[in-house]
Length: 300
Image (cartoon, rainbow, N blue to C red):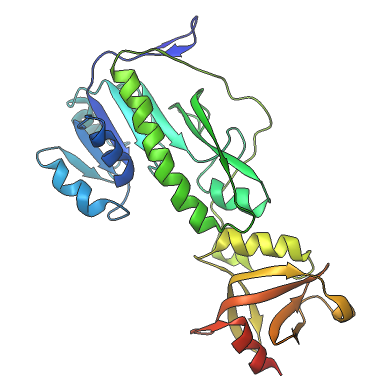
């Protein structure tokens, strides 16, 4: 239980109920913590083929209705001492949180980018750094006090997909390490979140259309944040052009072109932006994957 006076989190016992992706579960197992139950947020994912065989005899649930009293009763029957959540895609309700103290791993520097898609928004905003926060589970979305904060630099050309994969792997290890310390009887300090709250909602696919009136730097951030899936997109010659890689450059003599106008320079394809131009290195035109140089040949 959390001690309000000492502002710490401590648990009694080693019975862990795990919610989330395989990597977090595998990290728990590697530290000698075999869950008493697992609530999967999806099928598949990195480590799935190794995780399932290790769960022989462990009660498992696949995206159950956590508002169903029968489900809550089944989880309560497992008598957990600690709930551990690693990238579980749904909010865990108070009825479940009442079963035991809980911790969660969130891939942002809380309270910046609370919500389901923090990596996308961190890259899109041009953040140079984010963090992994292991925090106490509460009824509020990503609002819990922080037990561990680990800074994570964002590479200047790093895509959202690459950063998400990298940070989720690291987060699984940090989450399991905190869980191990708690079940070993250590009381860990709780640090309230401070600073301005920003939100990271899921982005509908239609909102990833490029606004070429924005600067080339802003266009580049959107493309990197959305790569490799689903990808930022635009239209070209009546076809859908999905952008996967490129970079901002000066427009030079093409500055007179209207934003959104494609042009060719040095055998490469560009699109004029509100400020500068964006060079296309890799894209999909219609159903065909295409390099920027191949696209340039189609434009001349």
